[in-house]
Image 1 (tube, rainbow, N blue to C red):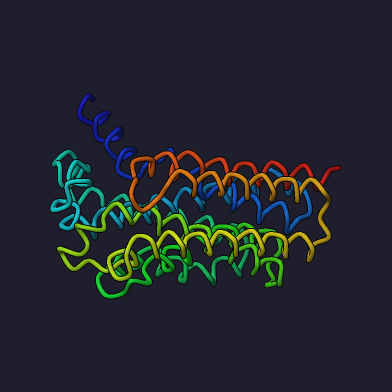
Image 2: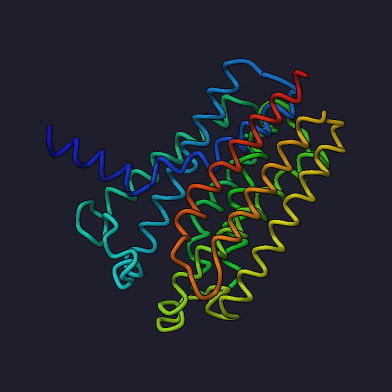
Length: 286
């Protein structure tokens, strides 16, 4: 029993289950915007199930695919696979099981979600390979996470609209922006080992500048969503607060001091997602 409990704990550590908060609020954002309010318990639970499955699969495959790179990088050498607390095979099996959960949830939502699920599967299973051949890998991660709000939207409104595309693009460019920041801490390792990243190719100052551009674009896209759907003033309050949080995030980091990356990456970004969801939901009822 102790061994099983330890395995569960290490699996939670491996997939960083607490960081699901990055993606879930945006899936819910797509859900409530498409329905223009609370869609009911069944769609909510199925979208939650699909999102948990998708993120578990993404993190599991990432850890499995990158296990040899992680073992060589001092920053990641203590992750469960290189540290020996989880086997590579068990992590792969968790990822495959999570994919099955995602597909079943998509099938229970509607035929379009099921038909599009192979795109999500391919993105989730393959984005980790991008760092092996292109510095555009950060935008590959952004595309993968952009599936969250699009999936939430299509769960209750199975049709592509300009608002849905802008919402998905906003999330994708936001994720790409903070992944650019996060990748700066591996600048030396990536250059030494030949791992492709924007910081390794263009340097840390350029990466932080591009991250700022990405986050400005995110705010512009969110304003576009609000205008397209004629959302109320509370939505724009949420967007303004998110913009303020992003400004704070960028003030925490500079090319000479990356010591506060964890605060910027994990704490501030979780607030961005939650604030946007809460204020958007409120705007639909005021």
